[in-house]
Image (cartoon, rainbow, N blue to C red; front, side):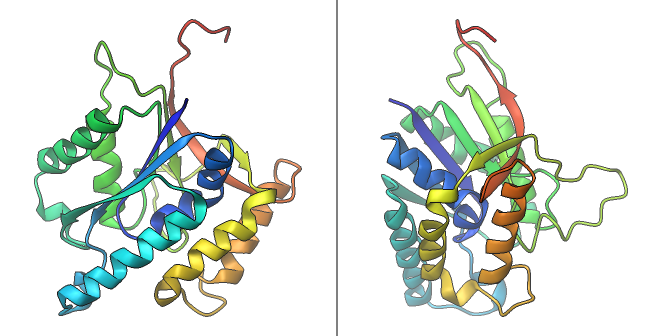
Length: 228
């Protein structure tokens, strides 16, 4: 049975980035676990423990709608993960990988505008460095509306997808899960609006000839004893 780990910086990143794919995995009988590394609220000013608990409840409800096995929360500072030693973040991610033993990991694109996204992506790369016995066969970078496309990157390290998952049957499920994060959504034409998320899914689908899709950058794929 396949085991899928989603490593996201903040609550809602996982649904924006790969909510339809999560639902597809769960429907196929795969075990999916979500790890949310940072707190997700504290950069906006003083928040109470009750606020953080409500945010985590929303994350659990959103993931439960898609069939996720479990949501694990880290406690790293929101929008300030560049102030934390990368080794500490990598060790946290590595512990989740060791405990869950996934074959596939979905995480952030390493050149997102949001600094937490970049740190989490680098932490996953560090935790999954190619040592003998590594069990992670596939690493996929997802895009997060209002971060990935906002990066102004003159070096050319843009999000250029080469892996697509059709989510035509699951787009409504993704949107229902995203509704649990209503406090994070914005009015159209903000890129983190419900309309923009749907438009992006339709556009990614149209580029590969299906009704709706999520797009990814394949970071690594190991074929073990299989025909290429």
